[in-house]
Image (cartoon, rainbow, N blue to C red; front, side, top):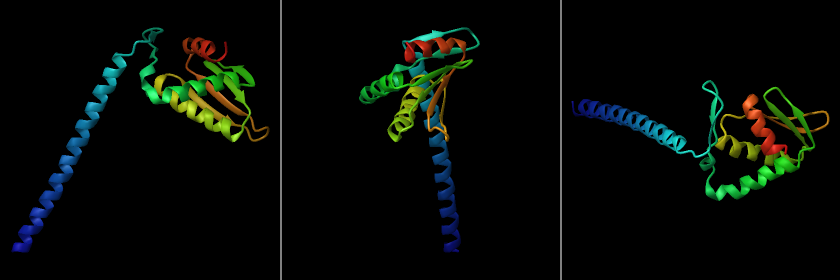
Length: 152
């Protein structure tokens, strides 16, 4: 009898704990979404092309301690390109495919997509000549920004 009561109490405790964890997880995701939308609304640099394709850069998405590294990477992406191909919605930039360059491009993408989530990134390493391609696209409006940032 005591064993039966203990088992029921234990199961009740486990179920209650699981339910509480699910509740807390749900609340934390709501809080995160709320704070993320607050951050987005505070972004100073808002650009809007039209009602169908709004986009906004969020320079606060990169932590202050990471900004020097991001600026270094952005300068490398701009200066180390060996070839540029225009695409419909952006540009493809070719680089030599050393391990360091590939790591730098991947790290650059992680920073850049945090502050500019409207840009689509693609990195391809060719097997024949070993070239590394960084493709950045986002449509006609984004293409002009990419040109100013990385080609001029």
